Image (spheres, one colour):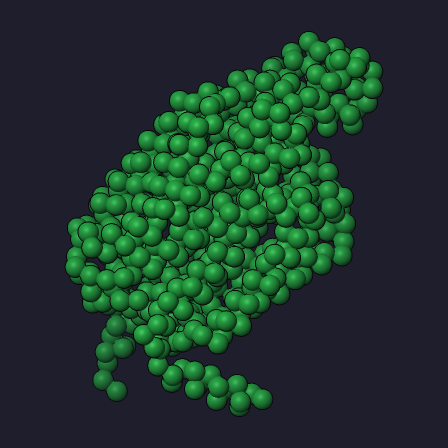
Length: 590
């Protein structure tokens, strides 16, 4: 059996890719990144149904950690492992690693849907298998761009990578819609949907994809892998726990463990950079940053990912916690409708991505990517000027504008990054690009949630206490409710819960109030109106920072260099970005 598999593999490798192969590669890798990115966000919108399904109270203080790791575990693995998996693709075959990723993703999807436990055990099962699923998804995203870069000629590469990249970004928002729809049926359906897609993708990729570039065997950089994975993981975990309250502080940035994680993670990353410049075959080829288009494109991608991640979470909170309840939507229905009302953002991606990718092949990446980031910054400033209870038509127009700007940026930027490196480094370059993008998404949660919590902490407790007392709640109960950490209030809106009803019901306070007071406190308008003022103050901080990041990204994008005519020859830069020791050994006579 083993010999038969080897013979079949050899026959597949010897079979030349036909003229239509590039479209097969595009369709398969687009399916792969779509399912991988959808599953990164599909859980976000369906967390209320998941927690109810396993019998876990999401607002209990001890359960915030489960909630955070349910979201961030997938993102952390994606941020940490994509470079390693891209490097393995360069060494052992990009298609081989990609195919294995589809198989692992399918197995994890099945395990997630069969969670046999409840409460904390059920949450840990889901977190564990989400990490395994992220491992498979990272194999897909780390190698998809490299497979496309190998398959398409330079004159069509921007279009192909544009479709692939925008599908990945659109998948993040389509996951929100799919999660809302499926969670309304059954919480396990959120994971079931991945099973047939990933199984089909596994079989299809194995039968259709070909290794069109020779693998460059080498040694695995164990020290680099270890220091990078540990450093990035500890640093991002520290940022994650920095969101949670510590003692009397609304956030955990003074927590000694958080500070130790931040300092220790940063130190390990510095050790990693030192290691990578002193070994023959590094996993993270720092010499690639000597290529200006590669360096500028990745810096712009990192900052844009931070801004985009902040936008995604803030829009969900804004819609679910304030706008939708004020317009008569029940709290438990807001996750689904938030996904629907955010569709203009996805539409903008889908329109601008392929078009800008196609045009950038002819006119260059710098003009489109820089202009797109300026459009993104303008949309953030427009959102900043909106009242909390906005006119949806104007809101939708700004979301569409933001999506168009991100589509204008992402496709040309990806094409510029991937086209700037020598062919044998495309796998690791794709992994490095994904690392910056995924790290930006994980960082955005820590950065923007902290900014929002800081904005709420100064005014929300007094507003909540005064509002409750004005509706007949005893001062002791009002004081207890007002002491709820602002991060819990944010998560309540994020999960489609009315925290006032949750708190007063658990304390028995609601049973002692009149019918009119009970109806007012648990209705659609009391909590949204109460938090709208503090929330708008937090939004002003968040969107101002996001607009600033987009403008800095535009500057970085403009510094990538001018357009060069489409060709498959590597651009000017280091002729061989390997360290000198490796070059000497490679060039030495045998």
